[in-house]
Length: 182
Ligand SMILES: [Zn+2]
Image 1 (cartoon, rainbow, N blue to C red):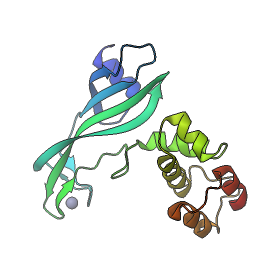
Image 2 (image 1 turned 120 degrees about the vertical axis):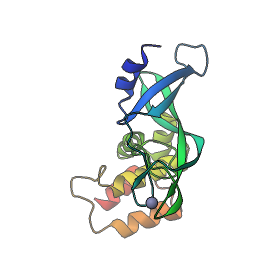
Image 3 (image 1 turned 180 degrees about the horizontal axis):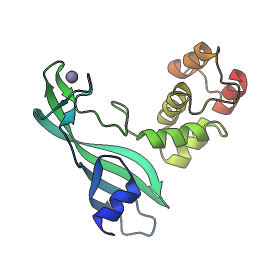
Image 4 (image 1 turned 90 degrees about the horizontal axis):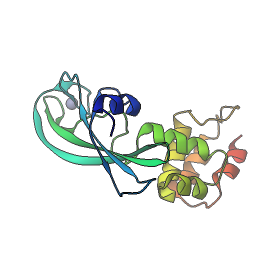
C-alpha cells in the first residue's frame, strides 16, 4: 500500500484518515477493505441533535460499501462510537459520509441512483455488486434528494414514485419509471 497519507487523500472522506488497507484476496482485482479513523476531531457528533461530545459509551465496527478504486471494490471499515448525548441519551455517532443505518456511502448511492436512470435497477445492482433492494433504495434516496432528478424536475409525481419504491410492488425497470414521472 502507498503511504497512509496518500491513501487518505485518494479516499477523500473529510475528517477521516486511512489507518490500514487489507486485500480480500491475493488477486489482481481483489476487493479492498479500508480501515479509517477520525482525524482532527472536536468530539463525536450525536446523530440525533448533532451536538458534539466526548462522552463515548462504546464502539462497534461497521462497514460501508464505497465507490471502487479503479477495478477494486471498496469496503470502508470504521469503529463507530455510541455517545452519551446530554440531550438525546445514548445515540450512534453521526458519520457524514453515509445516512444513518445505510450500508453504503452517500457517494456510492449517488452513482447507483444515477445509473438507475439509464438502466434497469437489476442491471445497476449487478454492476455495483449490491442487492436489488439496495439499488432500489439508492435510486429512491437519490431521486428524493434531487440528485437524479430529470430535466423536468419530476415534481408533482412524488406520490407515485414513493408508492412504487416503498411498497416494492412494481417490477417495472426504473428507466420506465423515469419515463413515467417525466
Ligand atoms: Zn443528541
